[in-house]
Length: 511
Length: 99
Image 1 (cartoon, each protein chain N blue to C red):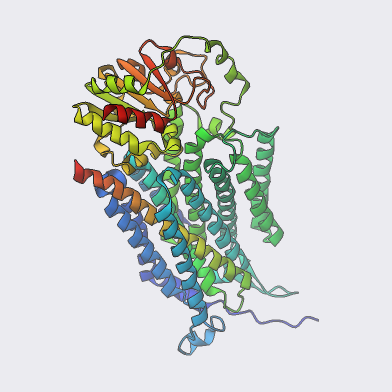
Image 2: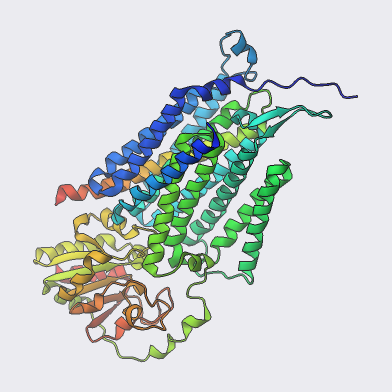
């Protein structure tokens, strides 16, 4: 015979707190601050104010949570509420929380100060993985201790111990939160390893990966459905595990130059994970933030895909450039004549020009050539040359990567132009200076229907009177595995060297 | 709050996000990613609740440590994300003074 156990008290203090309208209002203020933070980024002049709004919003959200959820020794005693006794604060637990925040702050600020601007894509990927892991940890904590999150009812069965039955809606939210968080985490770790060079940039194609991914995804959906009926721990942990695996499998086959899409996509996922947890906690700040970040990442992914004329699905399916079709038209062009120039030739041509347009790409980031490039720009400006920079949306490894590097090198942002703003100007340009970019300048994208990059918007550099193209050697091809028409044009001069060394020599020749 | 009110907030916030993000200048897309990273760490709210509530009667020690771990991770992101965004944006501002 099992003795009937009285139901454990449901933390009444949490209920009382949740009902306080001021608390909800504070979270709403935080949400509005986050909207203003993104709004500020519409122009460099308002962006810093926007960032301060973001910090204020985060401060409001954290302080509100801290003061409404002070740890109490010996549990949330119902006596304290019923008899108006003073709370017996658990000072050690408070200290632990503050120490955790302090530790995170120290690590975060040190990293942010030290990181090189060229390593920004890796840093962002690493930060995404942290959001994902934090979401997983919070979802697991909510599953293990649902009463603390106010998402469960105590059930006293006829036989056995009373247990906390998690609300059905909360179960779905929780399962989605843990799944999206886990995918964000493992996907971002792979993206980080690829961007950081710990893992080759070449796509790794597993046989039957589409079937495997679809099977895993199906299994997760079925498990989430089961979880609504049965809150057994094994279901929850299996969902978590499978999601880690699928995040890993999704990103492994995607190659280096498709990283702008991947990083944007993971950014979006981290937002949806936060939103799912916001649903679980009924927290306005988290829901608004999740929606903002989720749509931000989705829009960036869309912009990146459009800039490559590829569908989102084909990027996620992976393996660009590794497909069998790519090699077919690359081989024939090897023996075509091309012109080679020296740094002195380049310096002379540019100093005589009226307008020079510089086209930077990932190669500039790898060579860390942005500072010496700006030096070259300054020298040319002294000679009375108009210098502009043209940026393709997918140049680099993340959206806006080139803009940040040029900003770091003190290039005025009003000299930097986007593709659609500058493309018409190449016809009136004397010299187009391509440094570390390749596929985004390939005219075959406009004319050659058989080319894998056909239809991709490209910079019309070939319309300039002279094209100077810095490249390490004539052997290599761009990421897409296609030969670039541009190399063999009459108005193209190839500068074969490391990007940084070549620009340094040009600077010497100009000075 | 019932599910429908929360869903309404979510859907409307998605629309706000859509229009706000399209108005972001492409030159600031990297700072945009950094700052969205920082604000998505508002998930620290859930971590703080888990870390603080665990001494409750039903409290599970594991939930508390998961919460504390998540507080550390989210804090790295919040402070790191805002700091690195600030650093990037300061570089853009300098230009304006020069020109």
